[in-house]
Length: 416
Image 1 (tube, rainbow, N blue to C red):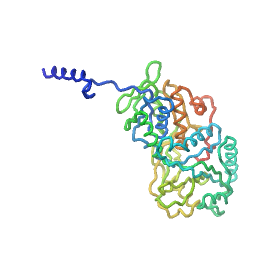
Image 2 (cartoon, one colour):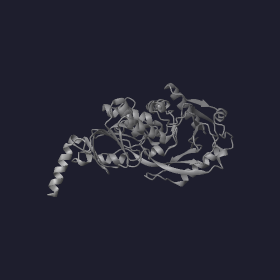
Image 3 (cartoon, rainbow, N blue to C red):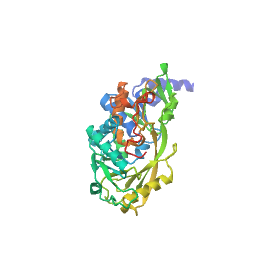
Image 4 (tube, one colour):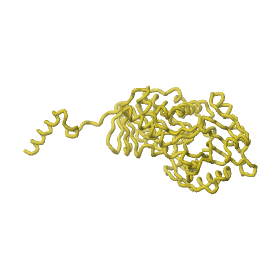
């Protein structure tokens, strides 16, 4: 009798429109038009542009950890577009133009600071390579200029240009529009703006499987918080795209490496720009909090470790102290490692996969942060339209089948 009475009460509750939802019979989880895997800068930017520019607001962004807790929060925040190949110039310049107005766009201060990115030349070969970059960029309408050693020091006074150093400074390429931004602010800015447009952001929700339906098309995402049905799925999970692709039944041409960075104790403003040195493998700028933000290198082995070898950071600090002697007494506060996906040609993969309805945006290597707004913008268009955005078209997965590579491995103006 007790159960019969309960059933009657439940039926009455369901008939009453004002009764709390949780008393009704369980309803199936809502289907999303698009599910984005990865709540880093690229994933959140994709969701935002899907909602704002394409009217696709029934979107969920799922993240196995916390918002912006992956590579978005583990980088040196450098922004530039002085790449060599036309395809790379187009996508990174598109990103820089979006960076310039992003704080106004999101109504959130991402602390974009176009303080200039200067790349040092230490050998005759460096001079030839960077001058080639300067000419290629100017032909593409992108600012870049060549500096003598004296001009480089005038732009960055702490720089040591004496001939006694192991790798003397012979000149530098300068992109004045390059700079830095606050990495976590970028994630939170896009997250807040996307949330305001109706996007759901679900943290602590790890993908455990990709469910495929009729014709092999993606149907749903299996997660630690249940099944989430989706019309389309975009994977933007730096360092783990291969894992998600394997769940869907195909392989990606990617390798994952630890990439290290570190910061110093905060000091008053002493460093006016971003300086990059490939020959000495040192990348440094100063954050608005006063810390020196120092970029180190990738380990030589494939790994999902977020620590990396100590010898990498030791070598980088040696280089920093030689280039900038005034920093020799600085104390380092912390170091960290991110996981970067690397393709055979060191250029990203953006677009469709062999699984209908499944899209990927990955393989950025060390270029991920600087591309954030441009990457999200063109990836959103690719997902919404079901075909590559014109800027994304050269970066399809099919290029590895045809051999039409965009080989930034030695042309990206970084040493890794």
